[in-house]
Amino acid sequence: MVYTRKDVSKLTSSERRRFVNALIEVKRRGEYDEFVRMHIKYYVPDGEGGLRAAHMTPSFLPWHRRLLLGMERALRRVDDSVTLPYWDWTRNHSSTAVPWTEDLLGGTGRRSDRQVMTGPFAYQHGHWTIKESFTDAEYLMRDLGRSRDPITLPTVSDLETALADPVYDTAPWNSVSAKGFRNRLEGWGQGRGTASWRNHNRVHRWVGGHMAGGASVNDPVFWMHHAFVDMVWSRWQRRHRDARYLPEKPPGQGNPQRGRIVARHEKMPPWGVTPAEMEGHSSIYRYA
Image (tube, rainbow, N blue to C red; front, side, top):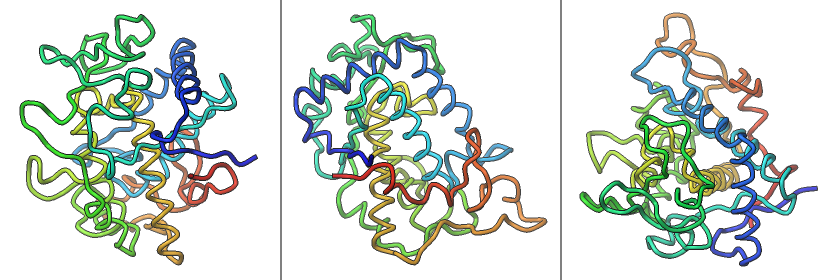
């Protein structure tokens, strides 16, 4: 049966509670940290060698679609009424409204160490210990809006720049691709600092703390954020019905991207599914 992913702001109090409880149970079972480890492993910048499957690469969108499905299946093994909600960060820019409420994700971190002190994922409650990260801190960290150097969330207009591009991706198929829907959405811009973070990337920076790096899965907002990114991909597909994932074929001999990116019919690690197989989701879920 096809299930529905809802806007997080539209969840009932019961749906919020069930979602939170399922997340905590997946964490208790040890499954959650497997997703954290997976994202860290496959977060390979284009300045490093080796295959890039998750970021700075055409497979950014299908790879994360498959990651979301894995988490959603884990949640639904706990409670089959639960689906991943999405957070539309173009319309709700408040750091105190949903999803940053006491009954959902809690709020920003305290000023001294960015430790989240409110909500069900606060370390003090004993349900959310950080085990896989780049620091020794066992508590979840956030810095909503970046208090010391403020930035804003993307706008509807910012997102439209991505949606309007009719081509999925373009050479050199990495963080410096100036055109193409994938990088306009993923958000690697030109230059340095604030202006270079767009759409998806800018949201990670706005949340801050764990969300600002490869260990971003530690913050449950990761799933709401990427569910929205996934929904945006669906919107783009409906707008550009003849467009497909690119590149269709692997780069040729001598191309510096050969062996470093996943073509449309090549398998994505660690699941062995292809981008082509992940281009549709209507038989599994829909967005409300």
